[in-house]
Amino acid sequence: MSRFLFTLILFTGIFPSLMAQGPSRSGFAADQEDKRFTRRFPCGGATILDETFSTDTLPDGWFSLDEDGFAPRAEIQPITPTGGWQFSIDFKDPDSSNLLLISPSWYENNAGPSDDYLVLPLTTLPANPCLSWYAYSQDKFFPEDYEIRVSTTTPDAQGFLANPAVISVVSEGDEFTFRSTSLAQYAGQTVYVAFRQTTQDGFILAIDDIRIADVEQSDLAMYSLNSITADPLDTLFFSGAIINLGLDTLAFDSLQLQISWQINSEPVQTIAIANPFILLPNDTLQFVHDSMWVPQNPVAYRLRVWVSGIGIDGNVENDTIARFQAIGTATGISREIVGQLNIFPNPNQGSFSVDVPESFHPETQLFLLDMQGRVIYEEQLRATRAHIQLPQLPSGIYMLVLEDINQKRATGRISIE
Image 1 (cartoon, one colour):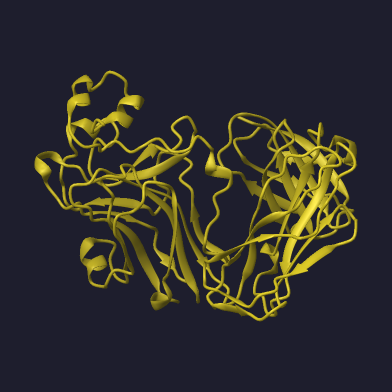
Image 2 (cartoon, helix red, strand yellow; image 1 turned 45 degrees about the vertical axis):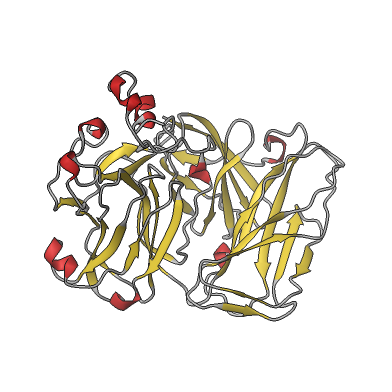
């Protein structure tokens, strides 16, 4: 396969002679599934810094250091015109609007290794700091190496090299990979954090969705809930996964851990995990609930699934996943809506405010649905006026739904430009 096949897909006709060259440095097309709505951070807790790179300009306080000064190979200069870190479309989903940061390691005259820093803003770290991010190597045959480094003095190479690397990643995979690491050795200090590209003769490293959080000591959460497509009278089972987002390793004796679900206001169905097990930080446990559900009508049902029974849990807000489950021909929830929402500005570009109706209980869930009735975003609200920053979405009309714990609902249409 050609060294540059994937880039030829993006830049047709620029390098017609490359098809005859040797081993691939191309990166391989990822699954066509858009993973933007299923990405989850392994670091739970309160957010200190969260950057998804929604524009092609580094945010205030961020910058790139090109310490090696090497020129990228001519073949990749249309993507990475210089060394250091720069913006690019997501190679794994080139038709989307997702942006990320990339750093080359394939240089003219086989120069190397790479030595480029992506520097985060000066940050005061909390008591239990956790750094998380997504990364991948564009080419699986030329995997990338990089480090996380911290400077307690100046945001330059000298400052970062004064301390050992917090973590060194060798041969990053070619699919989006969760990564996280504790920064506990710098807790309470005001520091610079950097991603340092160190690959010798590789291709391109991609980094996205960088977050620093203050992790709870103990925090078991719902991680995923598998989707269901079904008709009335189908027999259904709920399945998904829980995750340990805390610092503690969680050890469960028999029957201590419970998974529950509820449809609308029907009786709660609960199972207890029967076997003792240990859940390390950031590990997940898959489950299939043993209680079945047989929906009767082709409507949208309110579904809640939650984990409980572990004793101390520092963050109960992530214990539940709630969504609308459409059955059969149900494509929305308009028949259940009892009020209209005040959304402003509208239209907007994914950033807006919404007023929670005065009659609603303080515990209210927000859902964003596309025009096919699919829930593509949800958030727990804790204020009478919520300020929402959505992930990047295609332009169009969406339905915004609020529902409180008493199942009062209000809705409004929202236009995203």
